[in-house]
Amino acid sequence: MNRHDFLKAGSLAGMAAVIGTGNAFGQNLTNNEMDKLVDANGNFVLQPLPYSENFLEPYMDAETLHLHYTFHHGGATKAANTDLTKIREALNSNNLETVDYWTKKLSYHLSSHILHSIFWTNLTNKTSDPSGALLRKIETDFGSYDKLKSYLVKTSKDIDGNGWGILGYQPYTNKLTILQCENHEKLTQWGVIPLLVIDVWEHSYYLKYRNKRADFVDAMFKIINWDNVADRMNNALKLTS
Ligand code: MN3
Image (cartoon, rainbow, N blue to C red; front, side, top):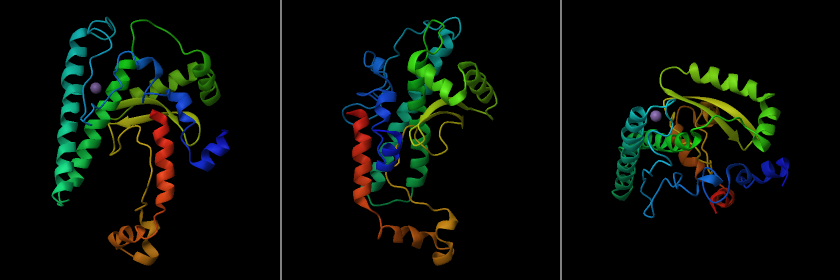
């Protein structure tokens, strides 16, 4: 499938070649299971690190790694389970009063779980440079590895407050890209593939619905193409099959 077909079909199958099939993050992670973020019951789990706590010395000290992994990553994983439980309770009791709060919390904690799981597996105990297909893609999208490196270094150092520097793949444009991520989430869960989106910017309803965003959202459910949503879900499922 070429890129045009990929975009036309809204298919994300092309991503499989980039991120590896069979798991969410990468082929070489099947050995350590660090990428299995949920257990058989759908609860979030903190997997063992793929190395010992002093493996990254001296660049990352064992004590920092221990605290970081156990209390920050581990704490977020635990909290994400609480958030999910609260959302399930709200849905079961038909009381949506608190779902904004818990959804926001879940995006914060689950994004932490996801990004930390990637972070630990991104690191090893020897220095290397990108090569092969990754290097060629970097050269196409950034000019050279040196340019990517200075761009990622600069944007990571300049993040306001807490956050992450991220090199990512944008499937909709088939490009590697850099993100400055403040905190963890800005209400996203990293890696989520949009299936159904509702545009609630004012420009999408102001002529007909004036200030009544709620009426507009209700009306959208008269015109949603669920076959299209189903297609998008099927394509997304292929990533992990
Ligand atoms: Mn951290």
